[in-house]
Image (cartoon, rainbow, N blue to C red):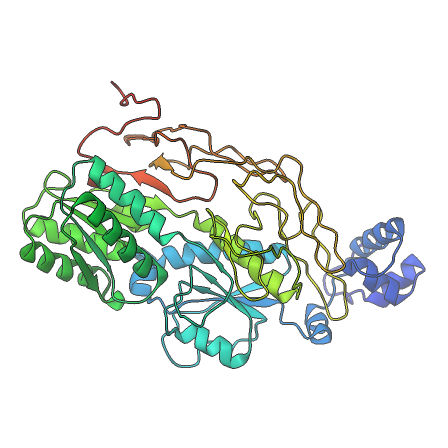
Length: 482
């Protein structure tokens, strides 16, 4: 039976009476704790559902000393973090993070750009994900002052910041873009980045300088203020083209700057891509709706955001031994970077049915979600399949056949109606890229890297008109249509 509108809400005492058990047994059964016979647990859950019982979340939080909420914060201004109607990089991360947090019973609090003030002092949260923190990041400073745990989406660049992080592969992204420009005939490409210390800027400059030296390109790097948005990109690129008229390609990492660069090229009577090619880092709304559409990179933000949630919840679960390896190693595609008390880099494959986190209440024993693998269970591409690290008092369990070892690192996919080159993931399975699999969207050009598709979660190049001077080469060496 269920309660009618306006009737008294059933209490835990009502459930206990109906099930002929104690209130403690009901509490343990509904919260998945204690030693309750599985058949009794299911019977209590069924009775609670029939009565329409819902636990008092506020009382639970007070009793456990938890807010059951995590924050998503960044010092990145909306001028670059948002797009049209503020739907951009930050909101794409927020949507995926909120979905994953809710699976674990946590709410996501979206904090507007934190540049100063007290944005993070007024919210009741258990911890936070900081998106691409700068070296002297205001969001990180406020979290540290409150003594709250946090993880980063994007490698922290502050020398003293050892927070766990999910790598967004800033250097690899630039390598993909610059290699593509060279394949399309670029001999004097310039790099335009934000005037800050985020990993995407720091790693991009290092990668560009290394590649420019290897190819004999004249190194041309320019910066623009993030809070200037598209106009800052326009102004800086217009000046750059005047200073260096021989530039034949622009690698403009911030998509807002890239849209401004396109306007500057048009106003300067430069044809795209014939005279100057343009590429950008983030395959978002700006890149897709620009005219011409911009070649960009699918950063796998939905998976990266979910990974960050799992990493933060693992910290909140206080499992210092879970997933810890003998020594640090570089994070692979979509993997998590090391930090104090964190899951080791590459240790957890999230987004494939592996959660690696345990929700713990005060005095409760952490447990993995049904069908999940404990943190540290899987290392991708290392030839290790189905191994599990056991945390304190926990049993690790690996999903059978969850990893294809040795997946190719390089990925190139088409623009279009979905990410190709990856297998559809079944329940509890890890998706892997199909070698050389590409499907072009309507009116768009597909391309596959000769080495094959990228593993799920790795950055993938999305080719569009802004950089295509010649037909792309498919995996078998044949040009599409030829």
